[in-house]
Image: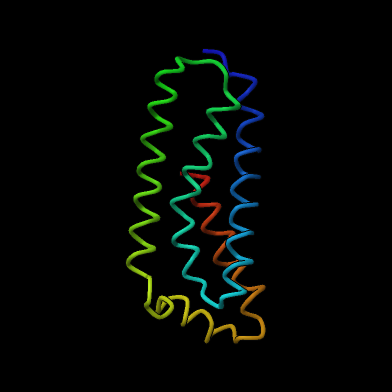
Length: 127
Protein backbone atom coordinates (compact mmCIF):
# COMPACT_ATOMS: atom_id res chain seq x y z
CA UNK A 1 0.00 0.00 0.00
CA UNK A 2 1.37 3.38 -0.99
CA UNK A 3 1.37 6.28 1.45
CA UNK A 4 -0.19 9.38 0.00
CA UNK A 5 2.12 12.37 -0.36
CA UNK A 6 -0.76 14.48 0.92
CA UNK A 7 -0.48 12.70 4.27
CA UNK A 8 2.92 14.27 4.85
CA UNK A 9 1.39 17.70 4.24
CA UNK A 10 -1.90 17.23 6.07
CA UNK A 11 -0.47 15.99 9.39
CA UNK A 12 1.77 19.00 10.10
CA UNK A 13 -0.85 21.43 8.81
CA UNK A 14 -3.53 19.92 11.05
CA UNK A 15 -1.12 20.20 13.99
CA UNK A 16 -0.51 23.84 13.09
CA UNK A 17 -4.26 24.49 12.85
CA UNK A 18 -4.87 22.94 16.27
CA UNK A 19 -1.93 24.85 17.75
CA UNK A 20 -3.22 28.18 16.42
CA UNK A 21 -6.78 27.46 17.54
CA UNK A 22 -5.74 26.43 21.05
CA UNK A 23 -3.43 29.45 21.30
CA UNK A 24 -6.43 31.64 20.47
CA UNK A 25 -8.42 29.80 23.15
CA UNK A 26 -5.58 30.46 25.59
CA UNK A 27 -5.64 34.21 24.79
CA UNK A 28 -9.37 34.27 25.51
CA UNK A 29 -8.92 32.25 28.72
CA UNK A 30 -6.31 34.71 29.99
CA UNK A 31 -8.58 37.66 29.22
CA UNK A 32 -11.61 36.19 30.99
CA UNK A 33 -9.47 34.51 33.70
CA UNK A 34 -11.17 31.16 33.19
CA UNK A 35 -9.07 28.29 31.86
CA UNK A 36 -12.13 26.02 31.66
CA UNK A 37 -12.77 27.15 28.09
CA UNK A 38 -9.98 24.78 27.07
CA UNK A 39 -12.44 21.94 27.70
CA UNK A 40 -15.02 23.54 25.42
CA UNK A 41 -12.47 24.07 22.65
CA UNK A 42 -11.20 20.51 22.84
CA UNK A 43 -14.18 19.08 20.94
CA UNK A 44 -13.85 21.80 18.30
CA UNK A 45 -10.27 20.68 17.61
CA UNK A 46 -11.65 17.49 16.10
CA UNK A 47 -14.02 19.46 13.87
CA UNK A 48 -11.15 21.64 12.71
CA UNK A 49 -8.92 18.66 11.99
CA UNK A 50 -11.45 16.64 10.05
CA UNK A 51 -12.01 19.50 7.60
CA UNK A 52 -8.28 20.16 7.26
CA UNK A 53 -7.85 16.50 6.32
CA UNK A 54 -10.86 16.67 4.00
CA UNK A 55 -9.41 19.60 2.07
CA UNK A 56 -5.81 18.39 1.99
CA UNK A 57 -6.40 14.78 0.94
CA UNK A 58 -7.99 14.79 -2.50
CA UNK A 59 -7.90 11.03 -2.99
CA UNK A 60 -10.61 8.77 -1.64
CA UNK A 61 -14.33 8.46 -2.13
CA UNK A 62 -15.74 11.96 -1.63
CA UNK A 63 -19.08 10.69 -0.31
CA UNK A 64 -17.38 8.71 2.42
CA UNK A 65 -15.08 11.62 3.26
CA UNK A 66 -18.09 13.93 3.51
CA UNK A 67 -19.94 11.47 5.76
CA UNK A 68 -16.94 11.15 8.08
CA UNK A 69 -16.55 14.93 8.13
CA UNK A 70 -20.20 15.44 9.02
CA UNK A 71 -20.19 12.75 11.71
CA UNK A 72 -17.06 14.15 13.38
CA UNK A 73 -18.52 17.67 13.13
CA UNK A 74 -21.77 16.63 14.79
CA UNK A 75 -19.89 14.77 17.54
CA UNK A 76 -17.39 17.58 18.17
CA UNK A 77 -20.07 20.27 18.23
CA UNK A 78 -22.26 18.16 20.52
CA UNK A 79 -19.35 17.65 22.91
CA UNK A 80 -18.42 21.35 22.97
CA UNK A 81 -22.01 22.50 23.37
CA UNK A 82 -22.56 20.01 26.19
CA UNK A 83 -19.49 21.20 28.08
CA UNK A 84 -20.39 24.84 27.44
CA UNK A 85 -23.90 24.33 28.87
CA UNK A 86 -22.56 22.40 31.83
CA UNK A 87 -19.98 25.08 32.67
CA UNK A 88 -22.11 28.15 31.94
CA UNK A 89 -22.66 30.22 35.08
CA UNK A 90 -20.44 27.91 37.14
CA UNK A 91 -17.16 28.82 38.78
CA UNK A 92 -13.97 27.69 37.12
CA UNK A 93 -13.43 23.92 37.19
CA UNK A 94 -11.75 22.75 40.41
CA UNK A 95 -8.78 21.35 38.47
CA UNK A 96 -7.99 24.74 37.01
CA UNK A 97 -8.54 26.47 40.34
CA UNK A 98 -6.00 24.13 41.91
CA UNK A 99 -3.65 24.77 39.02
CA UNK A 100 -3.99 28.53 39.53
CA UNK A 101 -3.30 28.20 43.27
CA UNK A 102 -0.30 25.93 42.71
CA UNK A 103 1.45 28.15 40.16
CA UNK A 104 0.20 31.50 41.48
CA UNK A 105 -1.74 34.16 39.62
CA UNK A 106 1.37 35.94 38.34
CA UNK A 107 2.65 32.92 36.38
CA UNK A 108 -0.75 31.43 35.60
CA UNK A 109 -0.91 32.78 32.05
CA UNK A 110 2.37 31.31 30.87
CA UNK A 111 1.89 28.11 32.85
CA UNK A 112 -1.58 27.54 31.44
CA UNK A 113 -0.31 27.95 27.89
CA UNK A 114 2.40 25.37 28.39
CA UNK A 115 0.63 22.91 30.64
CA UNK A 116 -3.08 23.13 29.83
CA UNK A 117 -3.74 24.56 26.41
CA UNK A 118 -0.85 22.98 24.52
CA UNK A 119 -1.39 19.64 26.27
CA UNK A 120 -5.10 19.60 25.36
CA UNK A 121 -4.34 20.52 21.76
CA UNK A 122 -1.64 17.87 21.51
CA UNK A 123 -3.99 15.21 22.87
CA UNK A 124 -6.73 16.22 20.44
CA UNK A 125 -4.27 16.04 17.54
CA UNK A 126 -2.97 12.60 18.58
CA UNK A 127 -6.46 11.13 18.81
